[in-house]
Image (cartoon, rainbow, N blue to C red; front, side):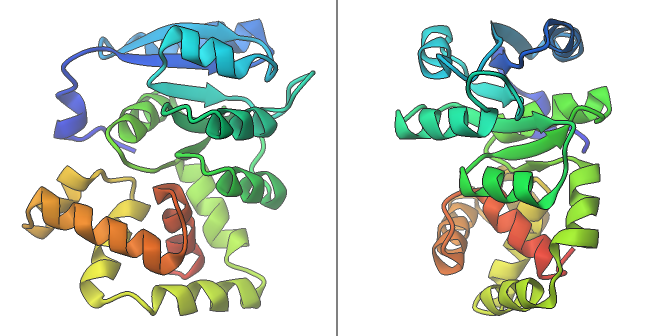
Length: 226
């Protein structure tokens, strides 16, 4: 997951919140992320409880959320943040990559799903990608989708049926979404105007009956487009 030229051009620090019950994990994440001058960690919180007020108070642009925490799980906290209308980009950060966690994360309308085993550069790229409007799936999660989430066959068939509703050009844009590209990068790759790609993305989400780019990316992987 390599940062693009557009991601490298971030004019001001991306304000990141870390919600994880392990202080050592938070400290490690802060060290990794703040090695990039375009990222500043503005919040550390140790529980899903109080996530809404914490994120609002810190003015986070991106929140990395652990899944398993005492008090209130990360996925429940994500539901709270969405219900409260929090505009921050939400990324699930976990050691787990199984069907139930991924299903719930997708249903919670997250913007990314990465594992704690991700390389430092991949974590930085995930933050930059979702901040720029892309969908972040770490390589291990994308691999897992190809190996597991594409089955059973009924799920793969459903995904292929959904994707078949798209035009050839829309499927090209969907591939860009699945690779984690933001609109500007897709536009450059396809030699289109940014506004044209934005229109395609809106149409794709509507036709696939999803609300977030990461949901469209999962469908692309399940359909075998990657």
